[in-house]
Length: 227
Length: 89
Image (cartoon, rainbow over all chains, first blue to last red; front, side, top):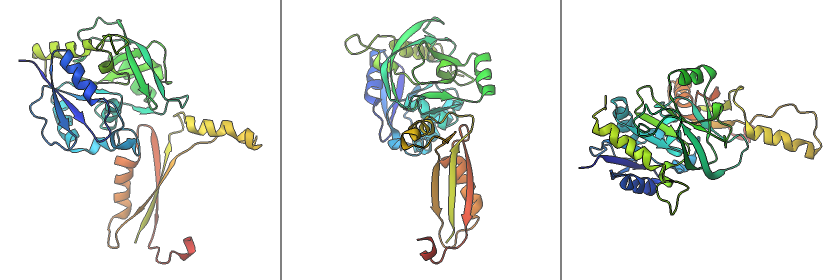
């Protein structure tokens, strides 16, 4: 009986199938969710995948925030359910105010598409607890709007409370303080720009480090650590 | 019919790489005395004939959807009952 991870498909999502495959390879059961589902089918966690939801109109993630499924995801996240947002999913989490800050156009204006080295800064989240802090992982990054910004007070607060989850070894987009991923206060909601779901098989990925994300949430769920 | 124009701009402390790119292109036009270019978004909203609280509703629209207060500021201008389009054409 494996944990069920819901993967949301918005109109314009691209990485939902890869995310489902990564969840499957990591030993959990992927459950496909649709953007206008009001129910999330009794899942144990939610993955918001990358892509261009609603064509990235207005701002990346701005319209997805108002989709039916996000009301339910938001309520579940507030109640402690593990939620991860990757790339566009991270943008949706920021627009939904589930995570602080915002993601804006890359400083050099270019779309960046390359394997990216990241340092896992904390294991104290639902999605990174299988990593040793300080571990370096390689996930592909592919985005045009991935520069993480927040005001200095918010950045200081994130650093002080250990909520910077991933940091770039070579900042590809001008993100403030090299931040690639952050988490919520309780650590159950994590967002990052690079794609762990594209790093789960040696044949197609630059590493298999992405499996650690699934292993983390499985370990989190099996310990009943949900608050 | 009330028409509302919302201007959304990146906050001054947020780098605007698009503006920088335009600024960088200006010398090629022969324009060399510009020190800053910033790019924003203009949104025109037309309310129904009998809409009420137009300004208040526009503020909600701008604050909750059109602008992300983490990175952007907005201004709202209400243009009251434009009956004849001619003068604006």
